[in-house]
Structures are given as structure tokens and as C-alpha cells.
Length: 165
Image 1 (cartoon, rainbow, N blue to C red):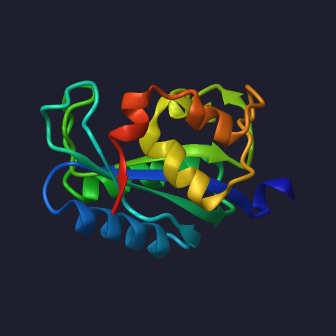
Image 2: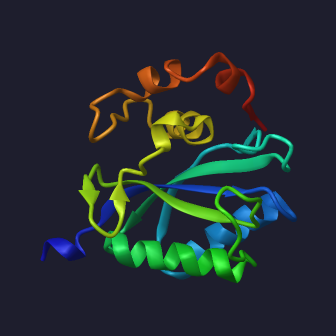
């Protein structure tokens, strides 16, 4: 019975190729078409491409969604949306049309097929700032760190180089 219960999940969506805003909006529509309820969407945030800041800048948002999909099924939906928006297999951290990541799945800790919460989320300004906008009381399920503390532990460069659009 538990598996059909609705879970609260945070997704990160980013794009740095093509019409970035349009790609993100199409990804949101793709989620809705799969009966995923978008409860809240953050503002857009623009940040430098990582690790190569000479690549096109990224546009990112975080969504708070409700779903009864398992993490594996949700990941499958996210990957299909990326492909439908033209994402191709490229090198790690290369520019992309769209990236849809599970940031936090119902505060679950998992390290099987999917690592939850997202293993690098607490070091990424483009995840932390929009997540903070949606849930100022969010606490990292593994480290127990409040989101405000995670943001303050970013480098000054990371804090200064992101801007809300």
C-alpha cells in the first residue's frame, strides 16, 4: 500500500543549449503529461557552466512535485523527457539541451540504483538557491544540515556568480 502513497519530491531542471527557458518549460509539461503534479516552481537562476565556465551559461529551476512513482520509475520518466527534448549522449558535464535530476525524494536515503538525495546537490549553487526559495526549512536527509548552512558553506564565487532571473 505504501508504494501508492503520494511522495514529495524536488527535481532540478537545467539547460544550457538551445532555447533554455523553452526547454525547461517543455520538461515541466512532459512531467505534467505523466500525471506528475507540480506543486511549486522556483524562479529561474542563471549560473556559469561547471566545470568549464567558458561553456554557455545554465538556466536552472527546482520543482516541488507530488508523485506516486517510485524513484526508479520517476528517474525513467526524467530521462525520457531529456531525450525527447534532444539530449544526446555527450561527455560528463558537457552542454545539454535539458537535464532533469531528482534532488530529494521524500527525504529518502538510498544508495542502490539511484543515489538519494542527489550526491552533489549540497555543493551546487544552482540547486541550493532555488531549493531554498521553495523550502527554507529543508534539511539534508544524510548530513542533517539545514539548507541555509549549505548555502553559506558555498564559496564566495559560487554565491556571487548565480543570479535569479
